[in-house]
Image (cartoon, rainbow, N blue to C red; front, side, top):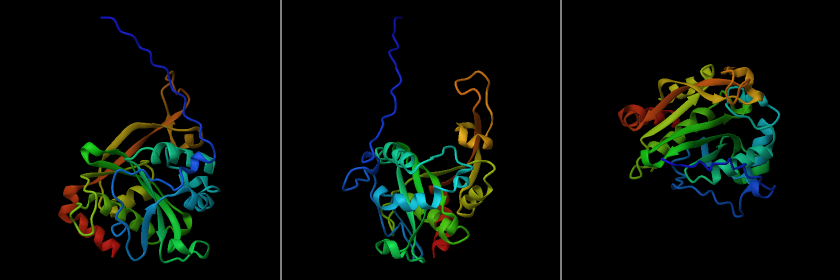
Length: 258
């Protein structure tokens, strides 16, 4: 049997400074409806992350704190790098979304129209529309907001939005599974997920090849492979599913949010 293999790698596109901020007006390009009433409680709200609106504040909180990303599998050294990733991997994929978390209890005089202060980000990634499954990921709580209501509210609001049926009140988008992944040594992340009702399912071994900036948090990889010399890491896997939601999970999250 004759065959050919004409594959050649396509270099990643290089975006101009204007392109990393996306189109104007900003098109979130998202396949599902945004339900503001579901994505908010009295203390916190989640809104789509818009680079021109939220980018500067995001970088002000994290740009000088690379330790925030100690347990993450990737790292951005500049705001431009982060926004290019956001444009290419998130906005241009209609199944992915990044939300900015606004703490409504802390006014921001510079951004009064926000209704509070930006406190972090949380997203949904690796979505499978045909399986009604997604992953809550890139969860970042700014250091100034840790130890408050923000982290639990962010996770609870996103879980409610993802797992509530469209016919429910408030409405959701009716997914069946929400995954949570964390570095096995990231006890705060795993603990937060468990407190919000996520159940530990196991460990994905050698899931990530670590970038050089985060090599210290990995394990030496295989000598001789394509990334010889780079470390790798596992991920602890948890999930909150529709049957968990309907057998007490909803009430648990509602109690946190109220």
